[in-house]
Length: 595
Image (cartoon, rainbow, N blue to C red; front, top):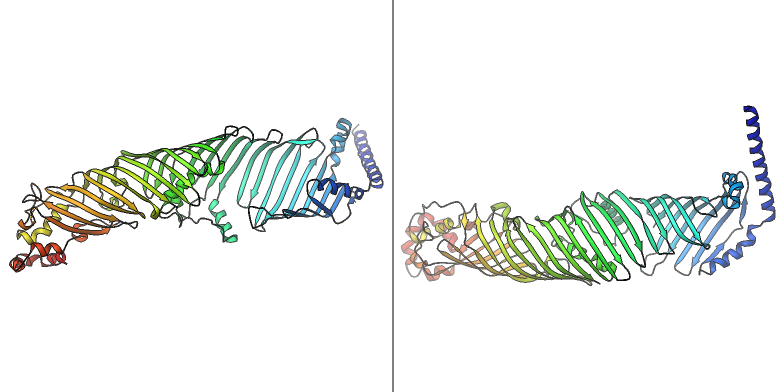
């Protein structure tokens, strides 16, 4: 029984081979494919494409039956030029088994394009886009086009490999391809690997699907681009770990004529963001909702944004309106944001965007026990321009000033600011405002004690007082102005014990400061338990100049000096000789005061 079955199968297989050979011989003898070259060229010319087949089309003999074309070129004006070394179309013999069920519609072909190239000259770029070494294999090509397997490989700009594979289903309506489904997509562009699925309906202008990118080293890709294209403005981050781990899951349902929805989940260096967007073409609107768990701006500081990383953040807020070109709104919520070592929490930003412009209708953030809020406008033309109104409430200055790292400054800041700026550099920022600092305290410095040490040579009394090792000032009230990134304090007033303090000064971008302080005491003692004030300094302004850097611990003795002019008015004639003996033990200190 088994032998009979095997004989029958062998007979059927032999008959199949015989019929195939017979059909091949008949087809090759009856049809000359070169008779259709002119018709093929005419059909493509209607699309402004010139096709040239430089060699005759030839039949492929057994073991594969099909057609072969060599040296085929396509050209469309100066915009497109493509050359293909070899095109082959082969019959899939196994599909002949479907003939009894589906007739000729069941016949499948396998196509192969080898050693192709495309050069595209775009009006938007002076550099032509070149794709070479193109190899494309399409298996399962049939009249139904419902189960294609595609593999491809190419080289972009002679530098970057592109390779991938996908399943492809094309549904034809009235003879025109309308719907393409890609249930499985794997695409590699150099270091970038993309997977997912797509459904494209050209009749409805709608597209939906999912794309996934895992563990993409964007920094390495940028470095590679920089090597090949040194003139491209590619940023270089100071943090070597920046953008080394990027992943994306994107789900979208897009209709180019109506309503579209997008959901993106992005992970950038273990910082997770969720972006929901919806667009309505008919209404011309776009709404964005962005939520993130953390963002460390310092990690992405470049040479261009070193002085103002927030400038890059402001610029990025304009991206939706810039791309959309119509009205849009955005809400951004970030649980934790770090910028210039300042930590913001519960950051909220609301934007109303128009082309190249964003109205910052609201922004707020917490800084320790306090907060900041405000509003403003951002504009993007050839550079970034912004105007902001900001208010701080009960913000700990320990969270804002670099000096807090070394001297543990404490205090609560209440401020109102109007800021304007252009470009991305902090030196372009201008503005003005007023502020109040409550409960100002420097735990590690006793400024009153050091002031008494300065006055000792004039009092003739030994400085033996022992005060607490800290400075506590009454509320600091002041007005400030920003010019070219430098902070000018126009009028600062406070009180230390019985001493009234007034100051004007400047804090530069590099954290260097220079302040002129006027001290006035209306009583004999600096405070209730303080030291005695020389009579020549009672009810008199004592000018002191202080300078240094916020990056260093503030020390009155080392950072401040009496103005030499005070000596000319306070000490006249032989008064200096009379006190010389009293100040002799402190002669070094005295020299420092009057120099």
